[in-house]
Image (cartoon, rainbow, N blue to C red):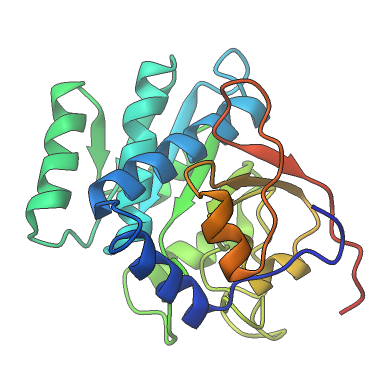
Length: 239
């Protein structure tokens, strides 16, 4: 993908997901599984378990959080020691099953986010996805504040939590303005917020067909080997 790569707005991203789950034949479970696997692979490529084994997964209440739960399972199987902070759990079958899968693998959950951030080696931010709308509500006000302050490397799922999917990071002085993750994993296609991100940027969208990509106006990169993610060049497009 070149610097002029196409970005999916929040509205278009939702519409594309709807198409993938209708004429595309995918279920939500399948898309979440593929997204979570992509994120786990991006973590492995950026910070392998030999160097940063302890991973704190901060999961929000929606699909982004579900992606994080799937990633936690794969990270456990990849040799990491994941611990999950999941304070707002929807009582839905899909999410309950993801929690059960983690419990069966002896993955720990924590209620102490302050201690968890202190003790971890790295963080996976799976709080808010492309449907995020402010204001940020508790307990995530405190969590975003911690992410602004931490020196631990952070990988964000799809967009950095607290950023607007279309306009990017919050304005100076607003909550989240100081949060800049080290790694971003865009899912399906980059969102406009990615224009403001200059760190290591992966794309996880190997499940998208050439026909759907052409219909929605974006190109598919060449994924290496059996990888579910590919690193994208920094977008030097002027904002």
